[in-house]
View 1 (cartoon, rainbow, N blue to C red):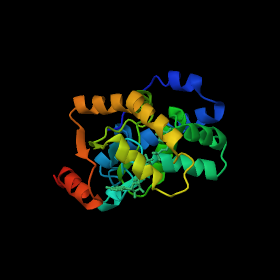
View 2 (spheres, rainbow, N blue to C red):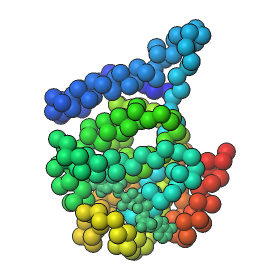
View 3 (cartoon, helix red, strand yellow):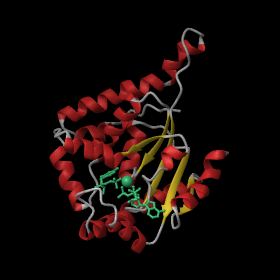
View 4 (spheres, protein in one colour):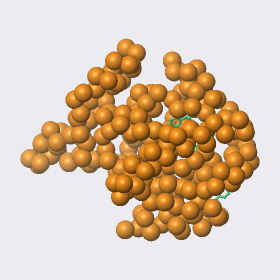
Length: 230
Ligand SMILES: Nc1ncnc2c1ncn2[C@@H]1O[C@H](COP(=O)(O)OP(=O)(O)OP(=O)(O)O)[C@@H](O)[C@H]1O
Ligand SMILES: O=c1ccn([C@@H]2O[C@H](COP(=O)(O)O)[C@@H](O)[C@H]2O)c(=O)[nH]1
Ligand SMILES: [Mg+2]
Protein backbone atom coordinates (compact mmCIF):
# COMPACT_ATOMS: atom_id res chain seq x y z
CA UNK A 1 0.00 0.00 0.00
CA UNK A 2 1.43 3.38 -0.96
CA UNK A 3 1.81 5.82 1.85
CA UNK A 4 1.88 9.58 1.58
CA UNK A 5 4.41 10.70 4.14
CA UNK A 6 4.09 14.33 5.15
CA UNK A 7 7.53 15.48 6.40
CA UNK A 8 9.45 15.77 3.17
CA UNK A 9 11.12 18.84 4.62
CA UNK A 10 14.45 17.11 5.22
CA UNK A 11 14.72 16.13 1.56
CA UNK A 12 13.25 19.35 0.29
CA UNK A 13 15.56 21.62 2.26
CA UNK A 14 18.59 19.92 0.72
CA UNK A 15 17.25 19.99 -2.82
CA UNK A 16 17.64 22.45 -5.70
CA UNK A 17 14.44 24.24 -6.88
CA UNK A 18 14.08 22.04 -9.99
CA UNK A 19 14.43 19.01 -7.82
CA UNK A 20 11.72 20.35 -5.56
CA UNK A 21 9.33 20.25 -8.49
CA UNK A 22 10.17 16.62 -9.04
CA UNK A 23 9.61 15.83 -5.36
CA UNK A 24 6.30 17.67 -5.51
CA UNK A 25 5.36 15.63 -8.59
CA UNK A 26 6.02 12.57 -6.46
CA UNK A 27 2.92 13.47 -4.53
CA UNK A 28 0.85 13.21 -7.72
CA UNK A 29 2.34 9.79 -8.29
CA UNK A 30 1.43 8.74 -4.77
CA UNK A 31 -2.09 10.04 -5.21
CA UNK A 32 -2.51 7.93 -8.32
CA UNK A 33 -2.19 4.86 -6.13
CA UNK A 34 -3.44 6.20 -2.81
CA UNK A 35 -6.56 5.12 -0.95
CA UNK A 36 -8.28 8.35 -2.03
CA UNK A 37 -7.59 7.57 -5.68
CA UNK A 38 -9.20 4.18 -5.24
CA UNK A 39 -12.48 5.55 -3.90
CA UNK A 40 -14.22 5.91 -7.30
CA UNK A 41 -13.10 2.39 -8.19
CA UNK A 42 -14.60 1.07 -5.02
CA UNK A 43 -17.81 2.76 -6.03
CA UNK A 44 -17.60 0.87 -9.34
CA UNK A 45 -17.02 4.01 -11.43
CA UNK A 46 -13.64 3.08 -12.93
CA UNK A 47 -11.24 0.13 -12.89
CA UNK A 48 -9.34 -0.22 -9.65
CA UNK A 49 -5.76 1.04 -9.83
CA UNK A 50 -3.24 -1.57 -8.80
CA UNK A 51 -0.32 -0.90 -6.52
CA UNK A 52 2.83 -1.93 -8.41
CA UNK A 53 4.74 -4.95 -7.15
CA UNK A 54 8.30 -4.06 -6.28
CA UNK A 55 11.21 -6.41 -5.66
CA UNK A 56 14.82 -5.41 -5.06
CA UNK A 57 17.99 -7.21 -6.08
CA UNK A 58 21.09 -6.24 -4.13
CA UNK A 59 24.66 -7.50 -4.13
CA UNK A 60 28.20 -6.34 -4.66
CA UNK A 61 29.59 -4.87 -7.88
CA UNK A 62 29.62 -7.29 -10.79
CA UNK A 63 27.86 -10.08 -8.92
CA UNK A 64 25.27 -10.57 -11.70
CA UNK A 65 22.26 -8.53 -10.54
CA UNK A 66 21.59 -7.36 -14.09
CA UNK A 67 22.07 -10.69 -15.82
CA UNK A 68 18.72 -12.01 -17.13
CA UNK A 69 17.09 -12.39 -13.70
CA UNK A 70 14.30 -9.86 -14.25
CA UNK A 71 13.55 -11.08 -17.77
CA UNK A 72 13.63 -14.73 -16.69
CA UNK A 73 11.03 -14.15 -14.01
CA UNK A 74 8.78 -11.73 -15.92
CA UNK A 75 9.66 -8.45 -14.23
CA UNK A 76 10.35 -5.08 -15.75
CA UNK A 77 14.04 -4.56 -15.04
CA UNK A 78 14.83 -1.18 -13.50
CA UNK A 79 18.57 -0.80 -13.03
CA UNK A 80 19.18 2.45 -11.20
CA UNK A 81 22.74 2.41 -12.55
CA UNK A 82 21.31 2.28 -16.09
CA UNK A 83 18.94 5.18 -15.30
CA UNK A 84 21.92 7.19 -14.06
CA UNK A 85 24.02 6.33 -17.12
CA UNK A 86 21.14 7.53 -19.31
CA UNK A 87 21.28 10.90 -17.52
CA UNK A 88 24.98 11.10 -18.36
CA UNK A 89 24.50 10.25 -22.03
CA UNK A 90 21.56 12.66 -22.31
CA UNK A 91 23.65 15.45 -20.77
CA UNK A 92 20.95 16.40 -18.28
CA UNK A 93 21.55 18.94 -15.51
CA UNK A 94 22.75 16.14 -13.22
CA UNK A 95 24.81 14.35 -15.89
CA UNK A 96 28.21 15.76 -14.94
CA UNK A 97 27.70 15.20 -11.21
CA UNK A 98 26.53 11.63 -11.85
CA UNK A 99 29.51 10.88 -14.09
CA UNK A 100 31.92 12.12 -11.43
CA UNK A 101 30.19 10.09 -8.70
CA UNK A 102 30.08 6.86 -10.72
CA UNK A 103 33.70 7.28 -11.81
CA UNK A 104 34.71 7.51 -8.14
CA UNK A 105 32.53 4.53 -7.15
CA UNK A 106 30.46 6.62 -4.71
CA UNK A 107 26.68 6.86 -4.25
CA UNK A 108 24.62 9.50 -6.08
CA UNK A 109 22.33 11.70 -3.94
CA UNK A 110 19.09 9.93 -2.99
CA UNK A 111 16.92 12.78 -4.28
CA UNK A 112 18.21 12.15 -7.79
CA UNK A 113 18.00 8.37 -7.82
CA UNK A 114 14.61 8.12 -6.11
CA UNK A 115 13.07 10.62 -8.52
CA UNK A 116 14.52 8.81 -11.54
CA UNK A 117 13.06 5.62 -10.16
CA UNK A 118 9.70 7.23 -9.50
CA UNK A 119 9.51 8.55 -13.06
CA UNK A 120 10.45 5.14 -14.47
CA UNK A 121 7.78 3.33 -12.43
CA UNK A 122 5.18 5.97 -13.17
CA UNK A 123 5.78 5.96 -16.92
CA UNK A 124 5.88 2.17 -17.26
CA UNK A 125 2.90 0.32 -18.63
CA UNK A 126 3.74 -2.68 -16.48
CA UNK A 127 3.31 -3.08 -12.75
CA UNK A 128 5.81 -5.76 -11.70
CA UNK A 129 9.32 -4.45 -11.20
CA UNK A 130 12.70 -5.82 -10.23
CA UNK A 131 14.74 -2.85 -9.05
CA UNK A 132 18.43 -3.63 -9.46
CA UNK A 133 21.17 -2.10 -7.31
CA UNK A 134 18.98 0.06 -5.09
CA UNK A 135 18.67 0.99 -2.22
CA UNK A 136 22.40 1.30 -1.91
CA UNK A 137 22.39 2.86 1.55
CA UNK A 138 20.07 3.31 4.51
CA UNK A 139 19.67 6.93 3.42
CA UNK A 140 18.51 5.72 -0.03
CA UNK A 141 16.04 3.36 1.62
CA UNK A 142 14.51 6.07 3.82
CA UNK A 143 14.21 8.47 0.85
CA UNK A 144 12.53 5.72 -1.18
CA UNK A 145 10.06 5.12 1.64
CA UNK A 146 9.30 8.82 1.88
CA UNK A 147 8.90 9.53 -1.82
CA UNK A 148 7.66 6.23 -3.29
CA UNK A 149 6.75 4.18 -0.25
CA UNK A 150 5.86 0.87 -1.90
CA UNK A 151 7.09 -1.88 0.37
CA UNK A 152 9.20 -4.42 -1.57
CA UNK A 153 7.78 -7.94 -1.56
CA UNK A 154 11.11 -9.71 -2.01
CA UNK A 155 14.69 -8.54 -1.55
CA UNK A 156 17.23 -10.79 -3.26
CA UNK A 157 20.81 -10.66 -2.07
CA UNK A 158 23.29 -12.11 -4.56
CA UNK A 159 26.23 -13.25 -2.51
CA UNK A 160 29.64 -13.98 -3.95
CA UNK A 161 33.30 -13.61 -2.97
CA UNK A 162 35.13 -10.42 -3.88
CA UNK A 163 37.67 -12.14 -6.09
CA UNK A 164 34.92 -13.51 -8.36
CA UNK A 165 33.13 -10.13 -8.48
CA UNK A 166 36.34 -8.38 -9.55
CA UNK A 167 36.92 -11.05 -12.19
CA UNK A 168 33.40 -10.60 -13.60
CA UNK A 169 33.80 -6.82 -13.73
CA UNK A 170 37.16 -6.90 -15.43
CA UNK A 171 35.78 -9.29 -18.07
CA UNK A 172 32.55 -7.35 -18.60
CA UNK A 173 33.74 -5.35 -21.61
CA UNK A 174 30.83 -2.91 -21.76
CA UNK A 175 33.02 0.19 -21.73
CA UNK A 176 31.77 1.35 -18.32
CA UNK A 177 33.84 4.14 -16.74
CA UNK A 178 33.79 2.28 -13.42
CA UNK A 179 35.00 -1.07 -14.78
CA UNK A 180 38.57 -0.75 -13.52
CA UNK A 181 40.37 -2.09 -10.47
CA UNK A 182 40.60 1.17 -8.48
CA UNK A 183 36.93 2.06 -8.81
CA UNK A 184 35.92 -1.55 -8.14
CA UNK A 185 37.89 -1.55 -4.88
CA UNK A 186 36.07 1.61 -3.80
CA UNK A 187 32.71 0.13 -4.84
CA UNK A 188 33.44 -2.95 -2.72
CA UNK A 189 34.22 -0.67 0.25
CA UNK A 190 31.02 1.34 -0.32
CA UNK A 191 29.04 -1.90 -0.60
CA UNK A 192 30.30 -3.11 2.78
CA UNK A 193 29.90 0.21 4.54
CA UNK A 194 26.57 1.38 3.10
CA UNK A 195 24.71 -1.45 1.37
CA UNK A 196 25.24 -4.25 3.89
CA UNK A 197 23.21 -2.31 6.50
CA UNK A 198 20.28 -2.23 4.03
CA UNK A 199 20.65 -5.98 3.53
CA UNK A 200 20.61 -6.47 7.33
CA UNK A 201 17.51 -4.27 7.59
CA UNK A 202 15.54 -6.41 5.12
CA UNK A 203 16.86 -9.59 6.72
CA UNK A 204 15.44 -8.44 10.06
CA UNK A 205 12.12 -7.75 8.33
CA UNK A 206 12.06 -11.31 6.96
CA UNK A 207 12.15 -10.13 3.32
CA UNK A 208 15.69 -11.12 2.42
CA UNK A 209 16.51 -14.11 0.22
CA UNK A 210 20.23 -14.77 0.09
CA UNK A 211 21.30 -16.42 -3.15
CA UNK A 212 24.63 -18.11 -3.65
CA UNK A 213 25.75 -16.27 -6.80
CA UNK A 214 28.64 -18.59 -7.59
CA UNK A 215 27.97 -20.97 -10.44
CA UNK A 216 26.58 -20.79 -13.92
CA UNK A 217 23.78 -18.35 -14.77
CA UNK A 218 21.38 -21.28 -15.12
CA UNK A 219 22.32 -22.65 -11.70
CA UNK A 220 21.66 -19.25 -10.18
CA UNK A 221 18.26 -18.94 -11.90
CA UNK A 222 17.26 -22.30 -10.39
CA UNK A 223 18.14 -20.97 -6.93
CA UNK A 224 15.94 -17.92 -7.49
CA UNK A 225 13.02 -19.77 -9.12
CA UNK A 226 11.35 -21.10 -5.92
CA UNK A 227 11.21 -17.56 -4.49
CA UNK A 228 9.04 -16.27 -7.33
CA UNK A 229 7.06 -19.48 -7.80
CA UNK A 230 5.15 -19.30 -4.52
N1 LIG B 1 26.96 -16.64 -12.97
C1 LIG B 1 27.84 -15.95 -13.66
N2 LIG B 1 29.06 -16.48 -13.90
C2 LIG B 1 29.99 -15.77 -14.60
N3 LIG B 1 29.81 -14.54 -15.08
C3 LIG B 1 28.61 -13.97 -14.85
C4 LIG B 1 27.57 -14.64 -14.13
N4 LIG B 1 26.50 -13.81 -14.05
C5 LIG B 1 26.85 -12.70 -14.70
N5 LIG B 1 28.10 -12.79 -15.18
C6 LIG B 1 28.84 -11.77 -15.93
O1 LIG B 1 29.42 -10.89 -14.97
C7 LIG B 1 29.42 -9.55 -15.45
C8 LIG B 1 28.70 -8.69 -14.42
O2 LIG B 1 27.32 -9.02 -14.43
P1 LIG B 1 26.22 -7.89 -14.20
O3 LIG B 1 26.53 -6.74 -15.10
O4 LIG B 1 24.89 -8.52 -14.28
O5 LIG B 1 26.57 -7.52 -12.68
P2 LIG B 1 25.91 -6.43 -11.74
O6 LIG B 1 25.70 -7.10 -10.42
O7 LIG B 1 24.73 -5.83 -12.40
O8 LIG B 1 27.11 -5.42 -11.62
P3 LIG B 1 27.07 -3.84 -11.41
O9 LIG B 1 26.65 -3.61 -10.01
O10 LIG B 1 28.49 -3.41 -11.63
O11 LIG B 1 26.12 -3.27 -12.42
C9 LIG B 1 28.74 -9.58 -16.80
O12 LIG B 1 29.73 -9.60 -17.81
C10 LIG B 1 27.97 -10.88 -16.81
O13 LIG B 1 27.82 -11.44 -18.11
O1 LIG C 1 21.08 3.50 -6.50
C1 LIG C 1 22.17 3.71 -7.08
C2 LIG C 1 22.62 2.92 -8.14
C3 LIG C 1 23.82 3.20 -8.73
N1 LIG C 1 24.56 4.24 -8.30
C4 LIG C 1 25.84 4.60 -8.96
O2 LIG C 1 25.96 3.96 -10.21
C5 LIG C 1 27.08 3.06 -10.19
C6 LIG C 1 26.79 1.87 -11.03
O3 LIG C 1 25.60 1.23 -10.58
P1 LIG C 1 25.21 -0.23 -11.02
O4 LIG C 1 23.96 -0.57 -10.30
O5 LIG C 1 26.29 -1.08 -10.53
O6 LIG C 1 25.07 -0.23 -12.48
C7 LIG C 1 27.34 2.79 -8.72
O7 LIG C 1 28.65 2.39 -8.41
C8 LIG C 1 27.03 4.17 -8.13
O8 LIG C 1 28.10 5.05 -8.36
C9 LIG C 1 24.12 5.03 -7.27
O9 LIG C 1 24.79 5.98 -6.86
N2 LIG C 1 22.93 4.75 -6.68
MG1 LIG D 1 24.31 -3.92 -13.10
